[in-house]
Length: 238
Ligand SMILES: *Cc1c(COP(=O)(O)O)cnc(C)c1O
Image (cartoon, rainbow, N blue to C red; front, side, top):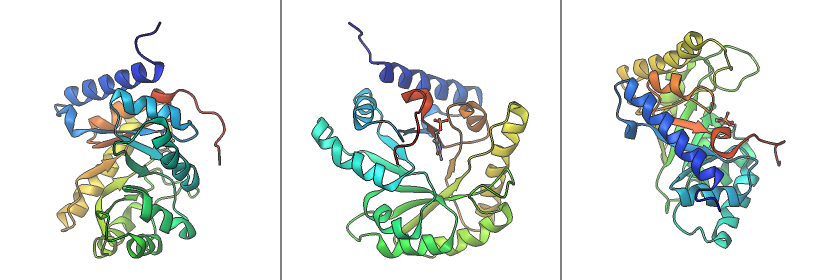
């Protein structure tokens, strides 16, 4: 009989990678939060990771996320799970995000932020927000252009029921570690500049299964890791 499940042992390995990367950057491993990206995986996989000790989970599709939130109590998972919404938010889904989720990482339009703010229930703490910045420069990607991030940060930080925490990026995969790091460094520099101009932000949400070391070296405070914990993904469920 296996002592540890596959998910639990992979989860431990990811935590060891995070700790090693933090130490070699001269950082405290506790300064990096792991968000386990469970999209396409069943609630049982979330339950397994939660039993191993994982507390924060990330999803990309609203309905899939809500289905899992509802399914977890039946699996004996009753403690609080922190939910991070990572995908782009459509206006007609903003209310569901505001009512059910703790963090939104993919915010790149004022209109969506306004809807989240208006729909966030008073009974919940402020919704934690990261602005997604397009650091790779392709037209197709979501995220604001780097030069627009400051204006949007000012607008979002003026909205009630939201707390602007930082910036998020999904750089294009790149085989060259120097170039990977330069994208992450760009996000950090944008964050630092906006903070210097008077809008303090403590969060850099960057780094995934294949590049979390580079992201941590450049200051990531949140890494979003799916495949390295849960295995390869099949097609999206939604
Ligand atoms: C899927 C996804 C991840 C996780 O990617 P992996 O390569 O599985 O680690 C992280 N962030 C976002 C925004 C994602 O969509």
